[in-house]
Image: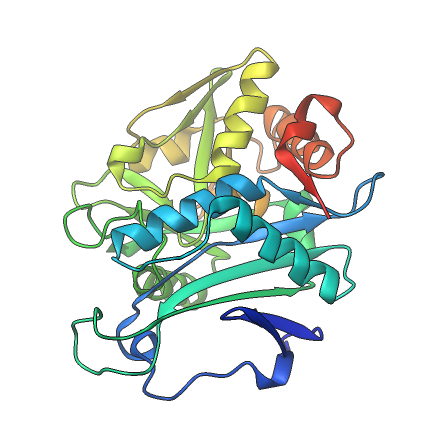
Length: 306
């Protein structure tokens, strides 16, 4: 499917026409993955377009850039305003947002420090990452033969471009085996995450998700769903999980900005629960979409209006 386009991309301090926002073929990040990024969504709400948890996303972007020694010479508030300005310039009311900080053209070799730091923000229309049908019918996943990168190799706490080569291997393998998505285990066999999503299981009415220390991204949608679950009175805990926990779960779903909240109906060909989205999954999914679309006043503090 062709990439949807809009009019402008914000790049290094100014808006450029979509087709003119280019980089040199010797850009450092193109060769070595030396960049960090965020995935954010803007939703239509009764009070106009609103970006979900924008401040939290931009704070995480700054943290990721800091850990890769990239000076991002903007405050979090200024970064948020750049996103808002880019959405306004494109006259768009609902979109996916991709801020990207990367090492540009100027120096080759593994050492990224001599290469200049560049910063872009792009927005475009993008539906659910795993397909609209997946939100209601669920997806089938498979545990990958590829293992999650470790904290002492390429830290998952940094949302780095290079980290996603690991995800790409797992996703391609899943596709070849007929699955919608892959699940990665860490080096000691504990469940980590999907290729671009955090995961949750429900067992005996308790909501469980892998610990950050098991090698997962500190997901913002993950955090939001846990808050919503606790507001409903559910027990929501972080704990180490193993592969068989996925098979015997009453319910299983994945979360992420791109994927939103997607039920899992089977893992490695083994039916999860009743093979359809379970009651807690559906309840949390409905509440999540009400929150991001400004339909629940309890979560309006998560929205930044355009």
